Image (cartoon, rainbow, N blue to C red; front, top):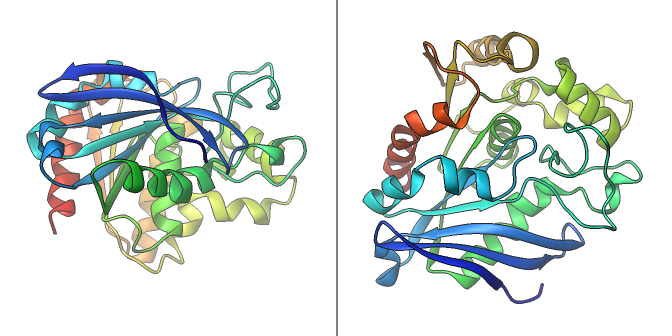
Length: 279
């Protein structure tokens, strides 16, 4: 992995909002990632909250729209927000917004042409923390959260890797990608036609055999335009109930799928993660 190249450096709530570029070995391309270092990072190593964004997003959406830096500074957390997919002229793409660049779905693709670069799960779970913990004043105390496609990625990362994260949360997550159009399209392309293989990347399927009962916190707006067709949080509620897995599902009246929703509750999510990361 090559050294980090800093692209942006901006003072923010007493700390620094930076954007870096580096060569990813997992993805075989250069990647951008955003890192917020709160003021406490000048004095000691801090826990890290990894944020995974949704379809069409880059590393910029969260850092410019969520207002999360204020709360990270208050609680002394480092925020890390990677891009949502590999990118570049050599990286496979699709004309649709919900497949290819900007739509990595946080899985490790097995099918051509996607398998050459689309290994976002490996990148987020293994390569990125190793990079962050080596290059920044970051401890090995980790939490993960995300929105929409990124909420799916956060839930799957935590469920597949017991002990790796101390807490997990999601906004408007795709909880059952095997059973909704967004997920069926992406999984069919990235993972192939065998639906049994899809279960390893589906939070509703993973809950049934989870070896760690890490509580799942999900916020969902009831005015979300994708609620009935793509998100279906009731399926995760049912899976958690059947498995005896702790699940806090907060239904927020009037909120849609946008970052206005994320910004409204990100402070509560960061407080939730900060409490877990102090343990």
